[in-house]
Structure formats: structure tokens, C-alpha cells
Length: 312
Image (cartoon, one colour):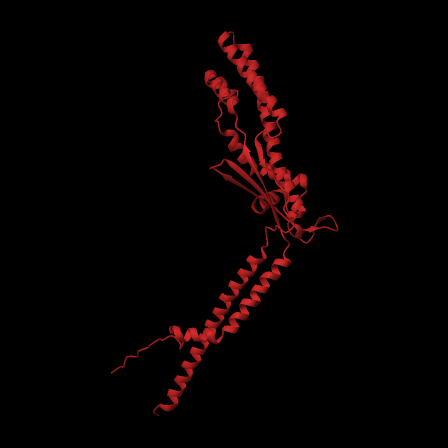
């Protein structure tokens, strides 16, 4: 008759018994404290070693077309298809969406990178400052597309507050003076780009309306076309004289103070290091408890075998 073999698996001594685990933690409290102190010290040291970055922010609002936009849309509705072709049937909030999109566009980012010569600063490890060229170590030379990706991901941030309709444009950079300059440069570039686009659209619309004026003899339609042309001329004039054409600066970017460091935050690194040290210390304590439990179980098993030797 076959005797069934029953295998009973029990956790090692100490595991599953909170009192003993706690005793083990208390017994090794200095080991855990050592982990906490060492990791916290490493965090603080990292805060002094890592190059600090500063954050500059400008608050802007989108300029609304106001009465001019309303009159243009009213004229566009009267002219129907002709107004649409002349660029008059635009949504009221198109300027706002265009400005917000332009702030995060690759076009603006590439122009800022090119004008400020940021490529070596965006990829400092690949740039040979002494030779003034990219390192010839077999790695890929960064392209302007790579620079735009890094600039948009790590340097530039745009936050839109729907409640106040305000836009916060921020730059995180190593040089606090250049950080403020870059923020203002981004806002200025968006205004210049949209202003040039508005001037171009106004000129094309006037040219189109002049051609349509020569084709029609109806007095009512000619009067409407003249009104549209007048509005387009006024729009072009505003684009020429208004520097903050699309974005009005509410709070310009200021140079951060020398001690106003965005990253690294030494206290945050110290706290993170201390918490990581606590977790590492407890994990090490757990491993030691597990090891002792197995050793105790093996000793008990060996002692039982010595007391009850197998029958020959």
C-alpha cells in the first residue's frame, strides 16, 4: 500500500509573524538609519553637483478682433461666397486658436533655436566647445528636428487657463538671463509671424476684391466691395503698426533670482533620498529576516534528524 506524501510549505520563521518582524526591524534600526542617512546625503550631494536650471514665465492674452471682426463677418455674410474667398468668413476665435497653436509650433521653435544658436546648448555632450563643431565620435549629428523635439519637450511649456483666457509661456534653461530672453523672444516671434501672415492675407484679399470690382456693374455689390476693401486696409494698417498683434503681454518674463532655482530642489532630493533609503533599508532587513528564518528552519530540521536517525 502506497503511503501518500504530504508536503507542507510554511513560511520561514519570522515571516507572517508581525511581532518577530518588528523585532527584527528594531534590532536592525541602525542599519536602516544608515541607509536613510547615506541616501539623503547622496540626494543633497546630487543637488550641488547637477547644473541648476531656472524658469522664466510670461503671461499673455490673445487680442480679440472686436468691432472690426464683427463688421468683417457682417460684410462677409452679405457677400456670401465672395466674402468667403476674400477671407472674411472666419470664426471669431480663430485668432486665439492660431496664436495658441503658433506658440507650440515647430516653426517658431526652429526659428528661436536658429536665432539664439541653441543647438550646442541643447546637445552639450555632443558638442566640442574647443573645436567649435560636433564631436566626431561616430554618433549621429543632431538635426534641427532633433533640437525642436528637445526644445518643445524639455525647455518650452505653454499653459492655457480657460477661466481667465490667459496663456502662460515658460522656459526652463540653465542661464537665468537667457531664460527670460527666450520667453520674450517666443512671444515676439509669434506676433511677428501672425502679423506678417495678416499683412499677406490683407494684400491678397484687396487684390482679389479689386479684380471682382472690375467685373461687376451692380451698384449695391460695388458698394459692399468698397466697404470690404476699406476694412481690409484698416486691418493691414493695424498689422503694420501694432507690435503685439496677436498676443498682448500682461506680465513680461522677468529674470529669475540667482537663488530661485527651478531644478534641482535640494530639499526634494534629500527627502526623496531619505525615503528611498528607508525603503532600501526595510527591504534589506526583510532579506535578512528571510535568510535567518531559512537558517533556523534548516537547523531545526537537522537537529530532528540527529535525534531520530533513519532506520537502516
